[in-house]
Image (cartoon, rainbow, N blue to C red):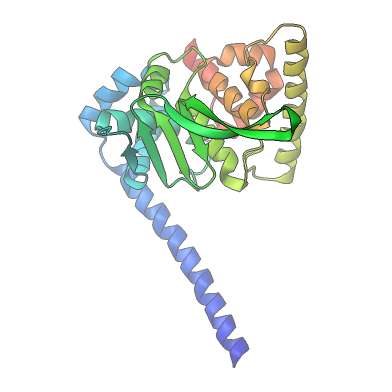
Length: 273
C-alpha cells in the first residue's frame, strides 16, 4: 500500500513538472507575441543603440524576450531609487542579448536590485599571517547564485550608451547568471552535451593560458587584467568583448570567439561592420 502511494505521488509530481513547464512556455510565448509598446521602442533607440544594429529578425526576437523578461522578473529600486520603464527596458534589452541561442530565460533569476550609483559591499580579504579582515568595496554590479543580480543604474546607462567599448555591466553580470545556473560561477555554464563541454574546456583553457602569457609580457590584449582574476571573470569579460568588440576578440582569440558564437547563437561581428 505504501509503495503504491509513493508511486502515485511520484507520478503526480512528474505530471505537475511537465504541466508546469508547458504552462510557463505557453505563458512566455503569449508575452513575446504582444505588440511591443511604442515608448519602449524609443527607449531602445535612446539607451541601447546596439539593438538598431541587429538584423530585423533578431530585433524582433529581442523585443519579445524583453517583454517576457519584464513580465517575470521584478526590478526593485534600492537606496530610494524609483525604477522607471526606461530603466527596466534598458536592463532587459541588454540581458536579452545573451538569450538568442539559448533557453528563453535565466533559469535561477528571481529579481534585479537596482541602485542609483555604485553600491558598497563588505568582503573578507586575507592578510599576512592568516588574518582575514572585512574589506569595503564599491561595485557597479554583482550576481548571486541564489537568483539576484545587483546593478548600478549609472553603470547600466553608461554601458548601454557605447556599444563598442567592450565594457557592459549588464552583459557581465548576466553572464555570471548563466554560469551560476549549474552551481558556483567557474567559467563553465550549462552546455548541451559532454562533447560541447569538452570542447569548451579545451578552448577556454588554451585562451586562459594565452591571456596569462600575454600579461607576463606586459601585453594584456583585448581581455585585460581583470579577466585573469579567475575563470568566472574570464568568461564574463569574454562575453562583454564578444558582443561589443567581436572583431578584436576574434582576431586575438579565434577559437574562443567561435565557441562563444556557438554558445550565444549569434555572430556579433556582423553588427559592427
